[in-house]
Image 1 (cartoon, each protein chain N blue to C red):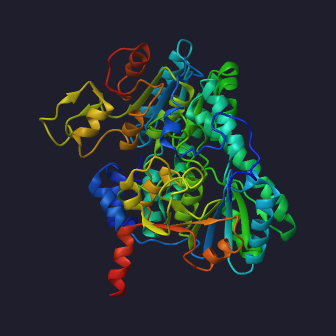
Image 2 (cartoon, chains in turn orange, cyan; image 1 turned 120 degrees about the horizontal axis):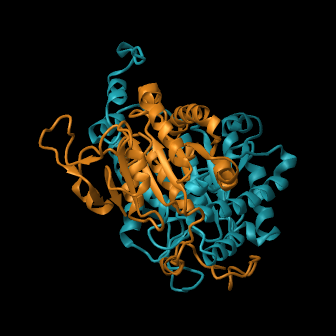
Image 3 (cartoon, each protein chain N blue to C red; image 1 turned 30 degrees about the vertical axis):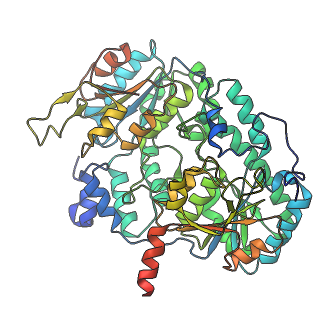
Length: 272
Length: 286
């Protein structure tokens, strides 16, 4: 074989015939990225931290989302909560692999997202499954007032096995960040039941110090035993092109979301 | 609300999962000690290369199709397709237009999908179906009835694809998608059909001095930090974490019989293996 490519029928392009695994070729694809929806704010409602608390935690937050929607376009990702934990428990007991666990757990987040969309329906919010986020989000935002989506990314059976154990590494924090990055969103705000990031668990350690702002790489290097955010998101932030940071705020405190949307320094900012 | 997680319904691990942080290393470690159930232990995942096979048209594709047909009654196969030259064109155009990695993934998926349709037209008369990711639940039925199914090789990440550490090309493409199918189902084999005999010390298309490597550990391959690779880097990184797939094989689809030999368990082409499991297996034998 003189030219092993003699038989291939190529379309002429800069990447034609090249190996996409070649480091020099990959480096050559570095160039500026355009933000598709630069005014978008991606808000995430925590599963265990907000949804599972029911009416008292969720309804004030939804009122605050509606009150802000006129000024700030928000799409709302929702996390799975305790039903996903139960699903993981049963699945792990049966010996199922990470991809099957991810597929099962995602359905719990879909339930939560659907409930949120029903509660916001009167204000023009719609529930969008992943294929409709890809195709219809801009149209929905132009026609309706907002959208709600399943926070867990649609990795399903294709979820990565984690380095340790079997728990799916991409949860609703990762999914919300990735939606924001793909559309070049203005902000990512994760609504949880803690004020943000501490050096230790403030419930267990009275010496725990609050961290108002920190870089993702620095936070990874601190190797904290538990985090209020999925560790994979920190890694993704080190490779971000458009999202400048993720803000974690306490969604149980009225006014926090409004302040975060206005750009106030509330909660913890983890910047890229 | 009353307590919906009645404690005696749960295992010890279950109780920790319900109340604990999922990012807690001790909890993650506890999930490591759960059983591994293989969902489809007899299935073989075979990836048909995009640029290496499909783009060559009839001279390369027809013999591969014939070989697949000849193996239908002998081996059950999930056939995933690569993307190839049209993906390279659309990536190049989309990068020029300033579009992000997630959009490139949506675009690349369409090319792998086209190649899967092409393959399905050629295999349709043998009763072979094409299955979208959403239809994977019916895949066992098709495998039992007809011996094979076709899917597009890209993982269904769409806009949710990770950024690469350098540049803009989606890091998890069809090699990775097929690997993850094999991993989740606990497949018998993961075979990549490309247009080379496997791995070389350099690109054999460009360097006549390149030497063939029949077998290498993923650890050694990563340590060599080669400028170019036969497989997506993401596959090698996932191999280190995989629970089910500890060996992947690369065969030359332009040589008749190579795919069959690999399906039959012969060490043709190149095998990349996880040294951690290879030594454990030897230990068991001793």
